[in-house]
Length: 537
Ligand code: GLN
Image (cartoon, rainbow, N blue to C red):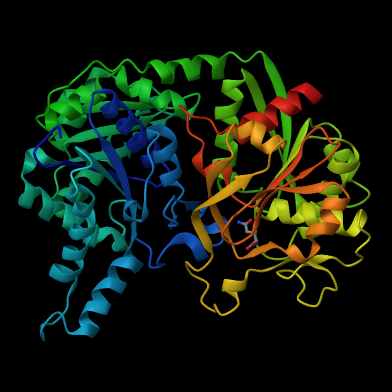
């Protein structure tokens, strides 16, 4: 144990959304880890959904799944990828969850006849959720990112909770980093500080003083600009950090470190640095990432491709595995909804590998099936993830086994060949939220399989998020024709991996390897897929 009680850092956003609070929080986490502290990062989301599991990816980007099966905000993916440590349900809290807990308590009579109010009942529950992460003494520092922008109506209870915590825990144990934008006016050639002044003042009206400002800017902040910000925002000049646009998100920890961001944060928290931040592994990754020796193009076939955040963990997994193999991976985003017999060859002939993406519902399914067929017949290395694996099975059933009309029950409940069917335990479930097969499940890999060679392990654990499964009624048909189930859950018999004989790489996995790839520890399956693709190029 390093410190008596944990320290809390809040990251708030001002002026506009999409400034990259998640990346700043994750980068700070990396730097503080490097200084010898145990860090975790939490996201508070002000929306009323219980979790993002039921949200359309177009609304909120990818839904990220933790080991313990929580469906969470995509920022948790950044936290894990940067910090290389798992998060859990406790790391993502929404307003919906807060209210649900308080209302459940009210129904049980826990409030003993009192009027239940935003202050103190909702704010107490928010504070309980924040400090819960510090209770087991697993962490020295807890970074909490507050979603939304200061001034939003729905963030008010969170800001009030921060104000109270600063008071409850003491100013040195609880600090606020405000991320803001310094716009550049091209006509006058000036950086403008006024929006930041207003945003900081807005926080102050709620009783919260920012301790550190991270200022997103396209141009360097001059001494004068910093002095002005310091004077009008009550922030020490050395606590004003420039957040210049970076070439890659993985540069951000270094750019912040160059300005002693970690030192400033530690001093504000009255903590000593325990070691120098050398970032050896991080720099080694960046070195390889920026100096690739090979190049590959992978088609990502999915239906949410117009919002690339919908596949964030997949695209980042390619960055990690690509760096490991000193290979630049270009992603060609292919919308499955527009793939047809006529354009499939044209769309996919210029790529070296294909990833068939996860997804839900019936839109874009036929395009994915065409892509799977094209990849199988043309020996193009292909990885299918979750729905992607199910698509591979459907395509194989239709075109190799001759099961005309084979389909997933998700798409057609009347299909004569339901090669993908609803899992037994799902049959009684009607609620959509949080009820899929979620989180970590074990899987045993077969001897002499590609997948076992890739993992170098017989027993693996991977994260899941699905309701449908491969229908074991067809297991022998598949085996006989060479599409082999090489990963099976030993308790349930669920098929978690299918791989095709006599193909350079045609592997479908029911789980989501992309959730557990990190900068320091790229995922073996992505490495294996890219290796096969390089060999086949
Ligand atoms: N829709 C499919 C299922 O529920 C696949 C889910 C996914 O790709 N995450 O089984």
